[in-house]
Amino acid sequence: MDILLDTVIDSLKLFPFLFVTYLLLEYMEHKTSEKAAIFISKADKSGPLIGAMCGVLPQCGFSVVASNFYAARVISLGTLIAVYLSTSDEMLPIMISSSVSPWLIGAILTYKAICGVIFGYIANSVLHKYRSKPNIDIKQLCENENCHCETSIVKSALYHSLRITLFIFAITLLLNLAVSNMNLSSLAAYLQLPLVGELLSGLVGFIPNCSSSVILTQLYLENYINIGTLMSGSLVSSGVGILVLFRVNRHLKENILIIIFIYVCGIIGGLLSHLIF
Image (cartoon, rainbow, N blue to C red):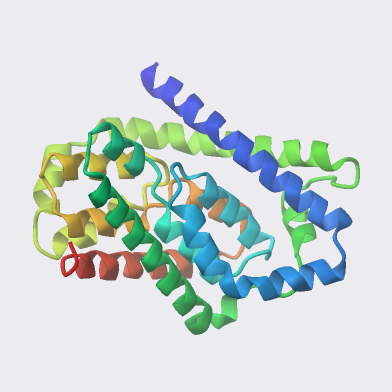
């Protein structure tokens, strides 16, 4: 019952983010002009910087927003990467409640944001084949969801939000049940190994809910893992952002490329953090 209740609460907390996101997307499709679409595409030059700044805020709401915006081709791949890498999810609240030094918290969040900006711009430059198109492709997103958007933008936004929320609830419930049976002591033993720890931590970070950030943060606070291992998993972890991406973005090869790129960035960021912290 505790797992079920936690899953319900986590899913409901994301609903406002989803509703506002889809309401904005519907409004853009119905009301904005071609000039507005061009303005958005040009403004995306600063996208990774803005995305990284939004991602460091607590919870994974912005990663969900970014996933939907990317699927609708409102933001670029680099902006999406920046949000994912900088997302702090549950790490920040746990560290604050554990009386961790504000300087250390600030340094970790700043490092994640810097990684998000740098790797975001690299993604825009290197993975240019997958950069967003100038036009806003929201209609395709609606077609994928079998949505009748011509009726009302509010009803359409509710329809999209409810479908994604139910999808997140179902997957999160299964994941929470699996994580509840995980042997953390055995996991911590492997995470303590040099390099292996960063590699495994990055895989843990892909758990598409807040469990990964909770597990890694608690292990770090109890001195089971070092800062590099924490950073690798934390950079990869984006809450349910990637889960939503696979739900709304129907380009499977593109999604796989994104998670591979994020994983590599997480490992590099984790290893480099040993030189800074």
